[in-house]
Length: 80
Image (cartoon, rainbow, N blue to C red; front, side):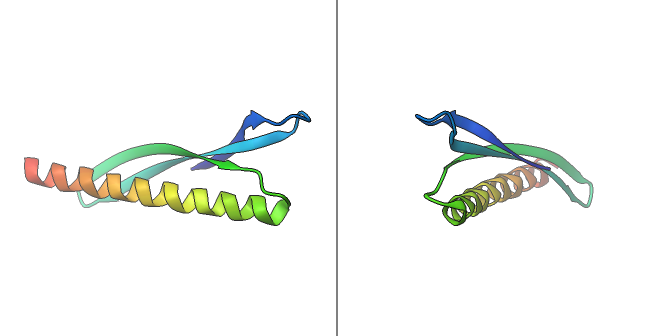
């Protein structure tokens, strides 16, 4: 699940930054988990710059959630 919303206003009342939030559902064998996180990104000078910033934020967020999911899975396997 992925959502994006303005998180800060600029001087002219428009959005100056956005927050992208994600929820990740993980299932591997008998392991089930749900993780969530968010990442902020700035508005670019044009729509292409904003989209580039959004995609970079999404990559950072996906990497962080994947690392956390792997760590949780590893810990759950050790606890068996």
